[in-house]
Amino acid sequence: MSLWVDEKYLRFLSPMLDRFTQKHPHVFNFRCPLCGDSEKNKTKARGFCFPKGQVLIYKCHNCSVALPFAALLKRVSRRLYDEYLLENLREGGNPQAPLEAPAEDAGVPAIVLSDTPSMLLRRLDKVTPRDAEYAAVEYVDTRCIAREKLTRLYATTHAYSWLTPLVGEDKAAKVSDGEVYLVFPLTLPDGKWYGAQVRLLTRKEYITFRWAAEPLKVFGLDHWTPTKRTYIVEGPFDSLFIENGIAACGSDLMGVIRIMIEQKLMGPADLVVYVWDNEPRNKEVVRHLRTAVKLHEFVVIWPRSFPKDINDAVLKGLGSGSVTAVLAQSTVKGLQAELEFQVWQR
Image (cartoon, rainbow, N blue to C red; front, side, top):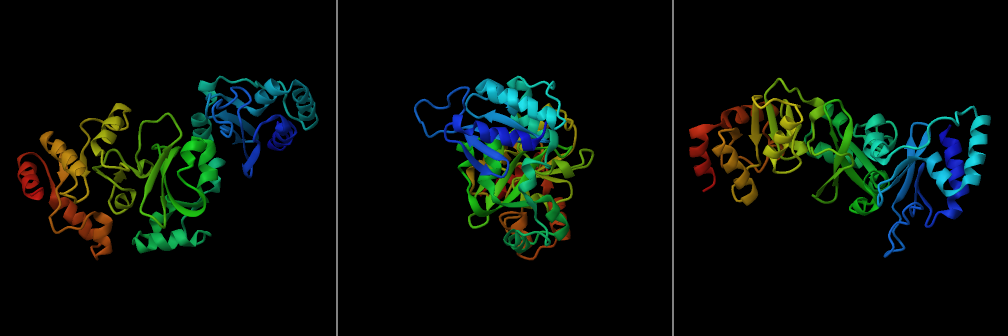
């Protein structure tokens, strides 16, 4: 079977598919013919066909069915399905290959994690000087990110088209095509993507998406060494300035570490240093930091004169060596942490 034949027969099938449209090369959208999609809103179209290797996969974000395209074709039009089998025989395909797959085994998470970034993620461009996304490169340069770190970042001008088959039309509506987004990949330690945090260059707003059944929400695990001291910070940019740094993509740093321990990505005795932003007036940061201090965790309590976060400090002239030194000097636990926390939050 081939992607070319699948797309050909999808177009033959399209008159039977309500609100059929092509969202992007090899990505097609229509109302689900299996569940009927939304009965209340006839404009809802939550069925998607997209590539996996050399075939199309069908996924509905309403009923959660996930099938090879051939299985969808068989259910919607037996006549076209029979023609499809004959054409695959002529093309040298294997019509005896299994066509049905239970949703729990063929859902988007397994598909995406099995071959990323070769298919759905290939439309993202690595942020390097050789790529077309010069706006993203220029922006990252203004944040003083070392050029060797740029290979860990991506940029896209088609965020909506890329994310729609992964997370559904409703969630993808938070972003749009035609604007430059910086993309921070959320990966497991083996490099498999399960989500991404995106940032529109023209607005300081981070949006996190996850398309796999994965409770984690952390940037940097693909460059993390569990046997070394782990620094966990709030934002991805900050983590790029720290050796063995990871980012929680939010302020719940302890929640991320708890999940990593539950998943046996790290042990409960591994050395972790919690690094919140320097925001003594932020109630959420203060609450998390107070809890960590009471639990006798290693925490960083910044000098009051330190900027809001590590990236801001670098922008104000603090070199990476100085950042490392301030981190070491500001890492405390136990009674010392309790005393310094009281002074810090005043």
